[in-house]
Amino acid sequence: MTTRQAGLNASRRGRTLPSSPIRRLAALAADARGRGVQVIHLNIGQPDLAPPASVIQALAEAPAARLVYAPSRGLPEVVDGWVAYYRHHGLELEPDEVLVTAGASEALSLALLSTCDVGDEVLVPEPFYAPYQGVAAIAGLRLVPVSFGLGFSPPSAEAVRARVTSATRAILICSPNNPTGTVYGRGDLAAIGGVAREAGLYLIADETYREIVFDGPSATSALAIPGLEEHVVVVDSVSKRFNVCGLRIGSLATRNPHVMAAAVELAELRLAVPVVDQLAIPGALNAPRPYVDGVVATYRERVDAVVAGLVDIPGVECHRPGGAFYVAAKLPVDDAERFAAWLLREFTLDGETVMFTPMSDFYATPGRGRDEIRIACVHDVPTLRRATRLLGGGLATYPGRD
Image (cartoon, rainbow, N blue to C red; front, top):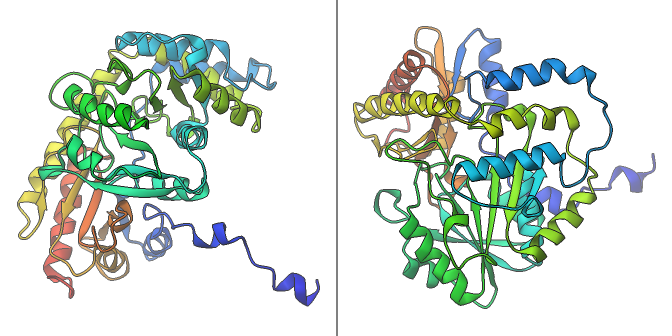
């Protein structure tokens, strides 16, 4: 290897991408486990629930499948499964309006690449799912924050409109929201969609947690709002509603034929989504209930237990989310990431500690979220109650308590 080769650096893009706050403290958690400490992981939305029986059966039969390239758009039975799933929610889509993707992450990437050009701006209510920043950066886009209302209520049309510039190309929302649990009502979607229509923008809606709503029916889809046929692009995934994060199956849905044509062209560059993963999920898509009803009931109980535990801790502020399975909380600390690292390095109670996700990277506004955390309610209620007690015990002795 020559000196010149030894000095070669990675791309500026690779060097400057924000690291994942969800996984950034993983090495400290591994060290804690190495010391014999049991770590309760509340940092990642990895459900502990079993998937539908149809998924298990399909995976058991997978060895008999012919492992060839699937069509870039997705296996026909999976595309039809997504169409049936949306029909279950009162949404009529044609098969050519659905593209099967490698999870919601690829769907979001394809949505941004198909609607925006390098240098464009995308409006996003904050806090938002932290990886949005990295996906936007790879696409050469700038995220422009719009503040939620009080109690993380959806931003008003006026607040969104005030952030539109000549560089704005899209509005990106998530409902129910990760990390706040905010659920956009039909009126909220119509109002924000009206801004998109009048300004000639796309409305990209991440609807990964659509059914996980605690008070009322499933969240309204942006696809259900009339007059936005050219504007709406929906990002979706089977990961959370069916508890199959490892299968990496999602979808992009839009009635805009130009956007879909561009997304399919991009999808052809990766050839296909894995066949076995696709074969596992048509049964669940075609019959989501009553399985999803049980998932919602479980997360409702878990979220309520976490909120009840947090409000009993002096100095902690939180609100009950309307959906998803996360709780965002404000802590009386100097820095949530420093506190999270301290819990893993120096704190134990009865041989346990707790790991959560600091939220500064869930904001695009510098300085915001430094004292906030996201808790993923992906354990049973007794474990979550222990976790909130650990959090309270840590706060009582943390040297950087504010």
